[in-house]
Image 1 (cartoon, rainbow, N blue to C red):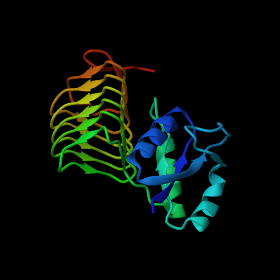
Image 2: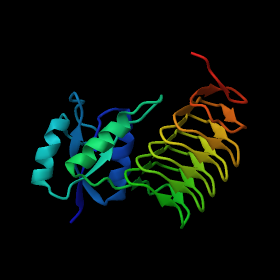
Image 3: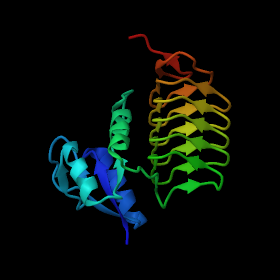
Image 4: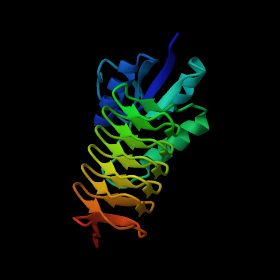
Length: 212
């Protein structure tokens, strides 16, 4: 019998997560929660707001959950949803696409989602509730904190470290053996060639902090 799982979030990112989970053929998706009904998502029904989650756990005692909330800027929504689910008693498995490539000794934290054609190389450690987007590359012996997002096509080169809540946007690059602090947003197509120790938003080649 397949484990049951509930999808938290009904936005565009939820479509990607549902597709990956269906192709894994490991879980039975019972539905999704969101503030509003988005209709069927790849055949997945709307269950209601997060208020229904208590009843779901009562009905399905070992039900799993996945945070299907994507980020395009620094935000703590995923953190809050994760913490809420843990307080309710949900287990959050890592969701790893059948089309992703992970080396044998990679460690993936609870609730992290690894999407199609992502590559995570040897000796790398990924924290909890992260997103490794389609085609993203996290090279060998890297370390990512919790709630980190590597967007589509981002490249995180060998031996680098990135702190909690940081985002590498589409096609962003961090060159090898660099340290990126927590709460950093590195914009689409930007290239970080130096360590970044001050949180904020960075754009350009080389990536420089944007004053807002």
